[in-house]
Image 1 (cartoon, rainbow, N blue to C red):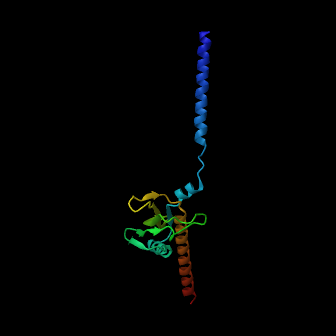
Image 2: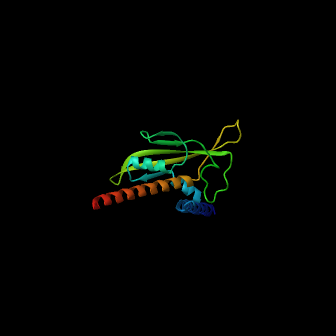
Image 3: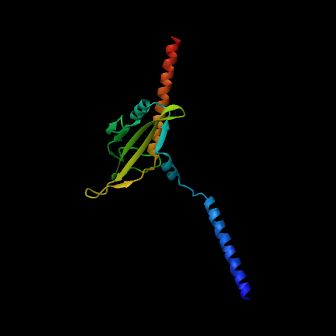
Length: 176
């Protein structure tokens, strides 16, 4: 009878061990579902443009409609002044802006080579602050990533328009 109790204990232990291993294996295969705003937030910080540094710099200035307080082309930095949320960007599904929110946009440019061409990596960081009252410290909030995505899109469109105009001018010069 003692042998049967030991066997049952060993068999139970094996079953538990097998079940735990199976649970860990299958748990590792399951991927956590991300909310759409989490996906946007992780994908919108940086973008690489296959253009010259000067062209990307100029395109960023063309699409940025906020007052700039700090810019240095040599170090690759553009920083806007704080913008009140009611004066800035609001997405199509966002409620009306709160009067206690303000934000600024910081763009960081880095030269490089990608796919054998001159390229520029652009990082856009939207720093949002919530002001409670006059005396307390501002609370930092995270961006939903939508305005950054819009800025990347507009810069890309500016670069495409610029390349198209340059190609048209070159074609016209060749035909004359």
